[in-house]
Image 1 (cartoon, rainbow, N blue to C red):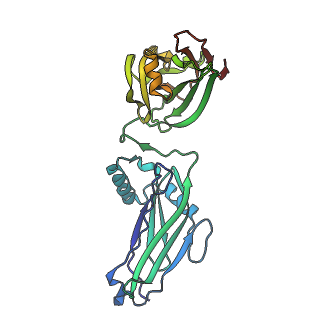
Image 2 (image 1 turned 90 degrees about the vertical axis):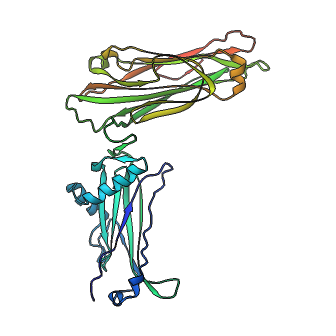
Image 3 (image 1 turned 180 degrees about the horizontal axis):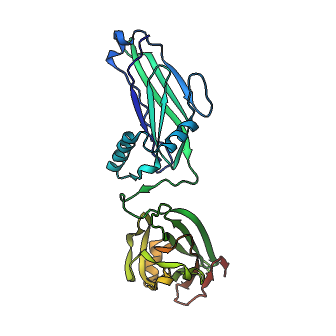
Length: 360
């Protein structure tokens, strides 16, 4: 039987926002499928490439991964085409974090997969051969499908704003709660590291911090309002010895006004947090290089009844990035507080804590 010309169905895998796979199945229905060239081809069959070698699948998925990791130049043109296509859609990838996998059906048709390293292929099904078409005649058909999942820990690099930017990956996180009969303050932090830092003398780190203050209805029919709240991060004494300076921070230093209709974004490099902002914010930082990351946000309620009527929690957020001596990790402490006021403008006792939750 004459060997058919190879029809390559390129399968680009990208993790969508909802953790779905963007996997275009690639059926090929060619008019020449009924020509003499295809006369000797077999009927349509499919084979599954997974973790086990079989007569029809001489390479496993794991072996393909090992091959592409050992030879980063393998499939270089296809990798670049994938990167260019993603960039046109506003998604930017580092070339070294894309894997190229190739799977060939026994009749010679091949399917290639371009897979970012925050995703792992478990199995690929390749179908090829003659299949009865809508007109009742045999058509040459090639198809592909894949199963896989998100990698829990990955060095995949996706530049949200294009190559040349610091790109931070998740390291750790934490949550603190301050609660009372008058309301609560929920505080969150996430720590990141630039895992692809090329400077051999320093490491880059970043933190996202945000909080939501809510009011309760203790002592009904009086209303209770969030009067003010704040959060501050600062390096531990040992971390001050290894910090080299600031890389960036958001929001800007100074006082900011918001009217509850504003959607605010704080952003540093590829990190961002969006929230609806109300009232007055005061942002301060310590500019000394050993105190990089010493930053505070203080929120104040100036229009109690109007803010209450707007409904929903009151929010504040900040992001900062710093550098440290290479091989050393900085650690930070946090102080958070919240105060409530009732509708007769009588002050209520507040609640504050350092590095932990509290019930006041």
